[in-house]
Image (tube, rainbow, N blue to C red; front, side):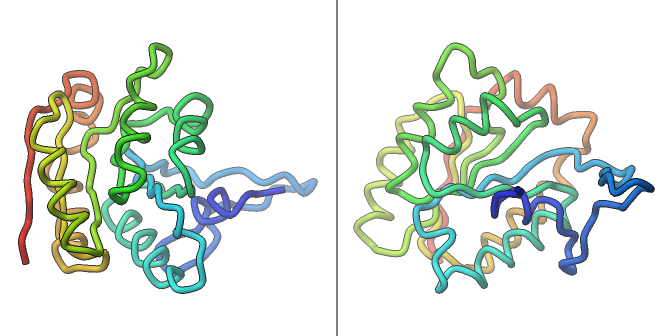
Length: 185
């Protein structure tokens, strides 16, 4: 049985199934594998009002050459890091799941830390708190956005495919980054 996040990862940008059926009923992935993964961690990610957002994130990830996974809580992200994360990844989360998600990457057995973290805020207070907290973090690039569904988010995700090719992703995930960006719209 596929979980919802597993189902979304096997869909292409237009919603088509990226897996191919072999003789005997076995399913295998198409030959081209994404060079990185976009993981969305938000307790609202499977709510009915977030279907459009989830679809947009999936499409943006596919267009940028990435796989897409999602989970409601940081614990699910931690488990994904331990068991399924094999490529460089970027994390999209909200203020509520930001701290627990980054704590998950600090565990000893976790070696694949996010290349970037995007924090989506839907309230002025959470935007201000997330911005202040992120400004003190080291070894991770954190971008705080004041809106959940904004043009800045889609532009940022699209820039990741242009910013560095797949050959640079492994180096970046090991080195860590010390940048912090707040985008006011």
